[in-house]
Length: 336
Image 1 (tube, rainbow, N blue to C red):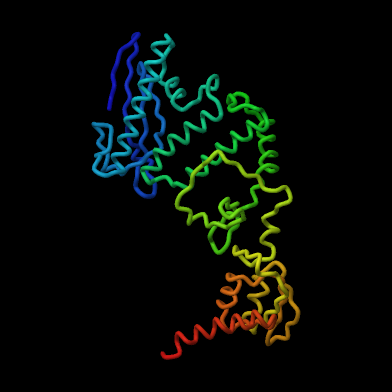
Image 2 (tube, one colour; image 1 turned 90 degrees about the vertical axis):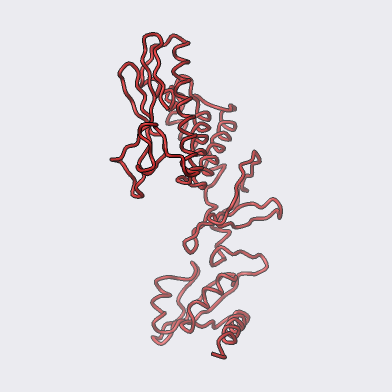
């Protein structure tokens, strides 16, 4: 994968090499492109990695024995074709050609012609190829596309344009973008619960809010449809009467009194079950705590996880619910 060419007294070559001295913890080395024009040599990252023993240094590619290696070789071929096309374009326009200039053109650093959305599209296009190598995650790929879509929406709302030259981006632009994101897309619809991130979203099928675990989303499609949260909506208020991420309008918030025994009292004091929790009494043998929330399924599971260290005092309905769960558990083990 090498091209040596003389045109307008220029010597030109492109090869790909690995940097063994910069291996990641997993043992893979970065693959870099090396462009040489008239003796000037520059390098730039392809954002791809390979085990050194899987690299063919004289052929400037991987062994191509696995799907990942075949994808890398295909991407390198495209890189090579793009670099050569940039070089030929400069010859056609009669420009003075340097290796640095070709690198800048490849990396979209020519601010005279590059625009914000075009740069985003180029990065997303390149990243999508890298996702195929399985070294780069789908989640980041989706986030980049969402960011690009937000920028497009911002440009339409604030400037009535579809794109903007990079040279027009300044501090005022960034300040306006920040304010627009705060007002048009309040980023408060995410919630961390038991080491899993959830996102609160509007489900168009049910025309209602639904909660989704980010790590359980198997597919995501970016559409042109938009949705804006009502101005008076607050995710923190939405979840304020719930223990975790389960919300149910049919389960109403109510006063709940929980008794914690001895060793579990400090635990309840240091890690409250809910922001409404307050201490009613502590006589050393036990302590009673008052909470105000909806007793949803995840809250019940949390109470059961404490076993006999806590007891529901009221309401009677919640006490009976836990008694039913405990009875069912007993029936599972009573014959052992």
